Image (tube, rainbow, N blue to C red; front, side, top):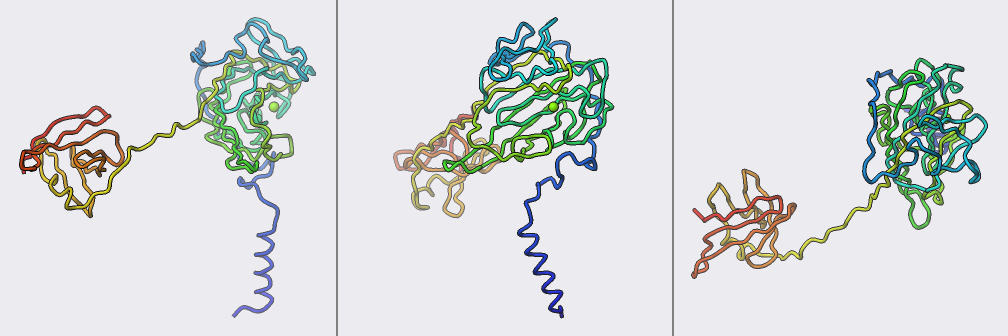
Length: 347
Ligand code: MG
């Protein structure tokens, strides 16, 4: 039997846990040095030249910064030379003039070949996604930093699954897929943002859900007003280079289909179709539902008219022919998947 003090302790623990400050789902506070380091994976050689999908918007093709602004809409001060752009210390972020939301973003970058600094001070920049999430750019080749701040981390929140970094000075790529956070009419968060990242072709973030916009030390709350925004590249004081940046807007609208009107039937109405047909086809009646056996698979049927049917889960039509006495003599179907035929009844 529990003593009163034990019971009180349990009650107090229960109350404590239910009213304690919300813990991040990862169980890690930002920048915890005890968080395990991502395993190192050699991503292989860089592709010599990336091609660009036909529906992509080229944000930087090596020519100029015409698609970019500096801070406060001013002219960007980053250098463009030899087909690449380079961050200039103290010049500030650069931002795309165009705003984006759900997108696929390709960015190639290289940290300085001349290695200087360590941890967050070595080859630091960042790709800032609409909604305010930084995919960290850092020379993470043999450069330890807190796990949630390495290259391809969702900064301060989600470390990459593995460290697929190439060495200093080598070109690296990010392929980032962003789904924006969704809000209801009352501006309540209905689903967090989702970020997938391939670093040098290696999946390192797979549908990672930010806790909100990223920041150093802080986590901000989701902002329902941030439905679209420019892409930003960070000036963190290091001469990180970028090239071949393109983006595709993703239309995630799901086209809603409409089923043809279905008709109820009684067993008496449809039992005349039950039987075996050529080609190992069979129509059976099980628990008041009609099933068609085709290629050894039983598929539930739906009725659209007295003698016209379809399948519950696949598009197409099934019809029957009858002789002058009303006896069903053949089964005919045409499925949108490409299969069709006319089969005589054999039993
Ligand atoms: Mg950064």
